[in-house]
Amino acid sequence: MKLALHGATGRMGQAIVRLAHAAEDLQIVGAVCASVDPAQGKDVGELAGVGTLGVIATADLGVGLLGAEVVIDFSTASAAAGLMAVAARERVAIVSGTTNLDAAGRQALEQAAKSVPTLWAPNMSLGIQVLAELVERALRRLDAEYDVEIVEVHHRRKVDAPSGTARRLAEAARSARSSLSEVTGRSGEVGQRRTDEMGVLAVRGGDVVGDHTIHILGPCERLELTHRATSRDLFAHGAVRAARFVHQRKPGLYGMADVLG
Ligand SMILES: NC(=O)c1ccc[n+]([C@@H]2O[C@H](COP(=O)([O-])OP(=O)(O)OC[C@H]3O[C@@H](n4cnc5c(N)ncnc54)[C@H](OP(=O)(O)O)[C@@H]3O)[C@@H](O)[C@H]2O)c1
Image (cartoon, rainbow, N blue to C red):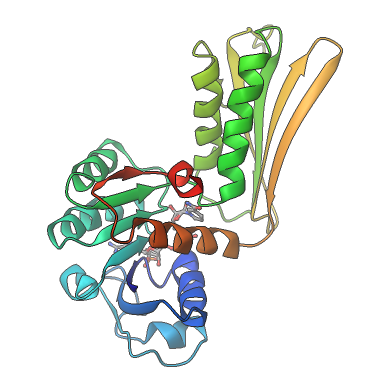
């Protein structure tokens, strides 16, 4: 499978270069970076520490996508929307893990899915997908006497909060209990907790890759469902698995639930 990477010089892009380099059935044919990136013009294999691959980081999307069957995107919300339009035009399947897509980004995703297989997941871990399914199932079984709170922990460099994954888990909770509304912080005289509140709270520090716990708090008992990512490679493995899934599939919008089958 011929792969292009968008956001190729970023942390996730580099993790995927290393993984794809080690896989016999994958060939990196293109690497797109930001126009202001000092790594532009450099070999992405050398940047990732796996030796020369002959693939030069370029800011030109047309050049970067040339000959690719699937593009894997881990970039920024604003850059991802532009990629999707070009990939759809060039008939390159899309796997995007970029979080915090705004309305334009989501629209670009839906538009691209009309022409090419397009998979977007704010968390490429299969474990998180199963966790979302467990949350929904638990809340269908437990009534509104059971309060729901989500706590996520991430490294100190993370710039957004709460995480895209915490929002995804909140969505899973809401699909079981539609009345739940997110509260992203509490301070001062906030009054008693309402039954339709769902705290979605962020802790930041150190080098934590990503922990998510859903607390389900009922009378005389507590249920805690936790996922801990121990390495960024988790997301790279998930993205490559997603790329194998979209390869030669029909156009449409897919998620990790489809990859799990
Ligand atoms: N779905 C998942 O499982 C998952 C897992 C981890 C991360 N993420 C998400 O993936 C995204 C990237 O994460 P990361 O940790 O790899 O961040 P990162 O290290 O900052 O990488 C993002 C890369 O995208 C580049 N970029 C910016 N504008 C671009 C453009 N127009 N064209 C091409 N590349 C461009 C950035 O370049 P500059 O540095 O020059 O701006 C940077 O190299 C974030 O949204 C993050 O939340 C998702």
